[in-house]
Amino acid sequence: MIKVATQLEESGRSAWAISEEELKVGDRVFVPNDMGGELGIVISISPQLEEKDLNLLKIRKPKEEEIEKIERKRDREKYAFNFCLERIKARELPMKLVKVKFFLNERKGMFYFTADGRIDFRELVKDLAKEFKMRIEMRQIGVRDEAKMVGGIGVCGRHLCCCSFMRLFEPITLQHARNQNINVNPLKISGLCGRLMCCLSFEEEGGRIYADEEALVEDEVKEDIE
Image 1 (cartoon, rainbow, N blue to C red):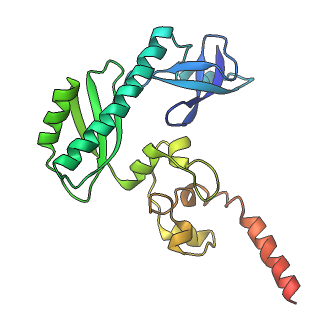
Image 2 (image 1 turned 90 degrees about the vertical axis):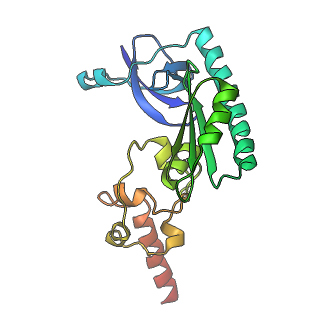
Image 3 (image 1 turned 60 degrees about the vertical axis):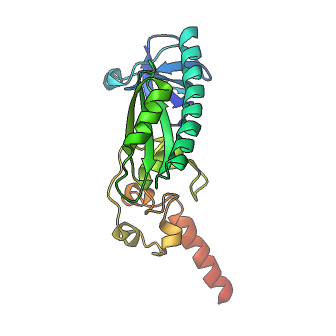
């Protein structure tokens, strides 16, 4: 049994897992999930395996038919996204489609969207069910969940925390910024989703990585002025 770090191919999310098979960095792996499973890549191998690690998700090398099935599912999801966009436009629904995910057995499709209010999408669901011959679920999400699904690069130059390692969203207020002596400028402390950056919360206790560097730069500027 070995402990490895994996990165999902589609979302880029990384996490630790265990495997009974011999794996090396760069290997493709099958990662089970609630929707049947997806493909990931081994990005690191831990030299140690502790007893608590046995509760981690167990992964394995994918079978050839699983790879083909997942890649075929991805193609269908892309087609479903474009088809749904056309039907939304045709029915003039005030909603923004974010992502489409099919279960691996393709018996159910999840269509995630954002909207300002409640949407009557019953006719849209009929269009989708007729086209894809599966159970359709429309799920309205918030802007933070949208950023988590779509992904992107934050002002720090790294992948968004919400789509790389975070599991749950925590409440964030301006007080988190004040406690870290950060300038409360909405343009500087807001993420791509338009809400306060998630890192304001989990960096409050340990301090921001570049806080000391900022203070050093300020001291150097003062010395130059004097």
